[in-house]
Each structure stands twice: as C-alpha cells, then as structure tokens.
Image (cartoon, rainbow, N blue to C red; front, side, top):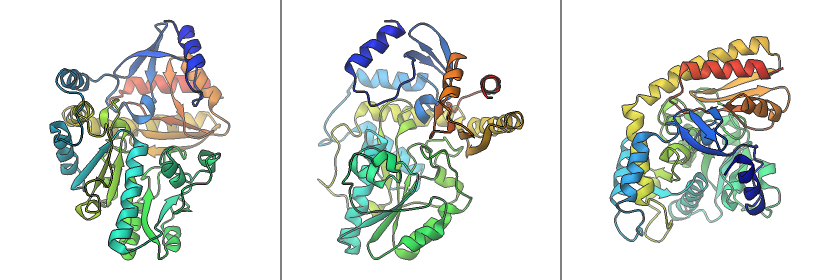
Length: 394
C-alpha cells in the first residue's frame, strides 16, 4: 500500500482518538525510518521515548524471534522463566526487591495506585486514602491514572473522576508538605515531567520529597515511564538525586519497542500485594520479557548510557547556539536525551516543516518541541537536526 491508501483505510476504520500527522511509517533501522512511499527520515521522537536503542535493534529482534518460536504466552498461574529472569535483572539494577509486570505505563501506574491504597488500609489503617500528585503531570489515560494526572484537559469529559488525589505545583517540596493530611498515603511524581513540557526540577527535589515521605510515613512513587531506562543519562532518573523510592513504574523503552510495563517496589511496599490482589493476563508474558531482557543487555553492551550523556550535552550545546539566532526560542530544558525546546508560538507548523525535510520531532504541549531520539544518536545526526531547525524556525 502507498501512503494515501493507508491514510484512507485508517481514517475509514480506526477510531479517531489521535491527531495524526500525514505520515505512514512502514520500516525502521537504528535512527532511521521510512514511509510507505520510500522516503527516509531521521527519528528524533523514537515513538515518544520508546525506541531507546533505535528501531529494530538486532539483539532485541533476535530475542523476540527466538522466543516466538518457543513459547509466546502462558498464564501467570504457572512460573515463567523469562519473567523471573527479568524481575531479577531489574531488582539487581534498582532499589527494588519485587516486580509486577503488565503491558503499558498506564497499567503500571494503575498498579502503583492500587498498591498505595492497599498499603494505606492494611498497614496504616487509612480508610479514605489520598495520593499527592503534581500539576501538569501525566500518569496515563485509564480512569484512575487520568484522575491522578494534574491536567484538566486530560480529564475533561470523564467526570466524575476517581476521588483521592490532591494536586500541588511541581518542583516545590514545600507545597507537598503543606498538602499532607491524616489521609495522605503517598506522593506520586515524575522525576522529569514529559507531557507537561519536559520540566526538570531543581537538583535535590527528589531528596526533599524522600525526606517528607519519611517524616510522614508516606510511600514515594516515581513514574519513570518516560524518563527511565537510560533516557536521562542514568538507567533510572532517581539515581541523579541519590535517593531510593518505595515504588517505581516503567514502560515505554523497557521493551525497546515491544509493549511491556512494570511496577517495581521495595519488600515493605510489596508485602500488601498477595495472591489475587492484582493481575494482568498478558503481564510478564515470555515474549515481552525476552524483549526487555535483550534491551537491558544491549544498554550494557553497547555503552548506551555513556553515549546518552555525551550526545545529550552536545545537543544542548548546539541548541543553545541556535537560540542565539532565533528569538522564537524561549527556553531549552531537559536532561540526557529528554529535551524540550519551548517556542514563543505553537509548534505544529515547525513539526510539519521538519517532517518535510526528513526530521521527525514531536510536541510536549502546544509550544514545546519534544526531542527524545534513540540513545544511539550520533553527532552527525544531531548536526542534521540543527541544520533543519535553523532552516524552519523563524
């Protein structure tokens, strides 16, 4: 099929829940993707921070192919070898002792909310538990996770929302402390806000939240669905602040393009989840777990984190130079290879112009360009991005 045929077929049969750009991608390799008409693009969005290893990384595709020939799905009523192996790898590399697997970031955050409520009731005796979350946060689109999300535009049309969430400004630990009451059971926060505009809090923010949670006996839940798995330059973003959460959620890049989510927790937090307390039919299936194992191995063997730090610094330097010549650039924010470029005007036309010149970037709000390239991006790739931005920005 050519691009026009794909557009027409999709528009005729798929629910219109996405505002799509006129582009039908059919193939990818590394930093590059190709559309149905054979045009080539450099992908600086990576499926919104999903393809951290680039498209179709050979270690991951080989692992998926081999596992697909062996066993794709069995029930969690039985022990699953790749699931156990992945749980061991994730707990060895993080603060956690336990892992629960699901299929997406929304499901992982839903699990974290349920865990916090159950912990509040069983351990602290709180009947009407509340969780503090942040303005401009994003935790998913299920009813519980959009209720946790501090953005009215995400919640509009779905009222009544799930009760039990209190929203405070992001980046201000004092506001978190003031919001604590007798029903508060947890603080849920993204170390770097993604959908809110790629907002990085001041250094020490997570340390202050950890202190507040310790003072009031609250669970600290970190949503690392977007900023985790190396995106920030460390495997997990919380490691920059030298703290340990009680619960952390992962998805997006965990499977390097294959759908999988996870909730990691300390033994203390995880103890309230016993048999029957939560479940996911496809969660932790052999195929998804094999993809994630290969992705973790590739991060280590390909020196991905080092490249992320180096290229993240280079990209920021080049963007700073670009800003000097384009007054439309208001701010440049980010950490590692999770970068937002805030413009004075809406960015939709800039995104379209970049696409026409073979560069894919995305939005993080109305006025912020989101740059989340694969962590394998090279200096020549970045140079081409800057060249195109220089051409399309006013």
